[in-house]
Image (cartoon, rainbow, N blue to C red; front, side, top):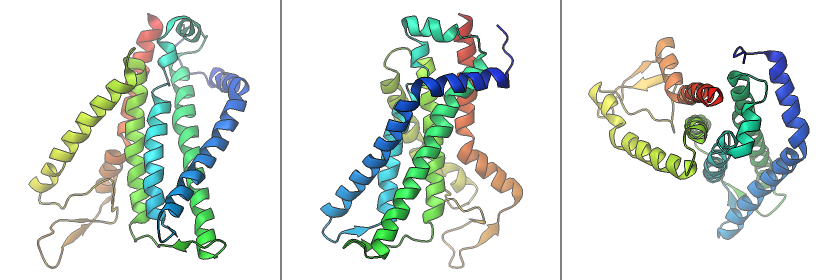
Amino acid sequence: MNETFSTHRFLLLLKKEWMENKRQYLLSVTALFLLLNIILLLQIYQRGNRNYSPENFLLIGLTMFCFLGTGYAITTFQKYRAGESAVFLLGIPASAAEKLCLELVKNVVVFNLTFILLFKATDALYTWIATGHVLPIGYVSSDIHYEERQLGIFAICLAIQGFFIYCSLHFKKYAYLTGIVIAAIIFWMLVKYANSISTFFNIDAWTFSNPDFKRTYISTTSESNPYIENSFLINLLRAFYMFGWGPLFYWAAYYKLKETQVK
């Protein structure tokens, strides 16, 4: 089979996917929007002060994104590993690159953009309701690092999502459980040893949850709290540190898919 990437074949795969599953996708988007709003309303009205807090909603969104994102990601290539469906899908006249791109469009681009847009729409809706006094709900403003924290959380989710996409193709049985165990071990190691590099270079710990692309603080002990202005190279390395993990897992999944397709 020709393993080069063909835009025409890829567009045909996209069209086939949409025509076969468009009703399911539209219902899923509606259900996701309702689920976000139901959970948020329960969170607001179970609290005594009944305030809408963007930071609390960000935590809700993060939890949902992790569960739904990893649950959806682990199904990416499971159908390529099971019985008759695997024979049919692997026999489709398309290269591994085209099949991988189709799954990435569905699981990464469409799912993530849909979730972000629904999250932003819900946030804007409840901000308007709370600040406009449409309902008896207060509003708790977020701190100055709120936007950066959203970016950092999204980077973490992309890395985890990429890892589970690879697990969906690499592990035939108990893929989700195996992925959770491995991810938990990696997370524990990062929490335990992540600050060792920054400590060695006397740089204040920079984290996903609070990225600062303008400056890097080099000490927390000094009263003057000195910092250096970030150069293009520092920001390039920082961007790779945040967003490079997902593409690495996609690349590994591509070679695994090629190997599976040849077999």
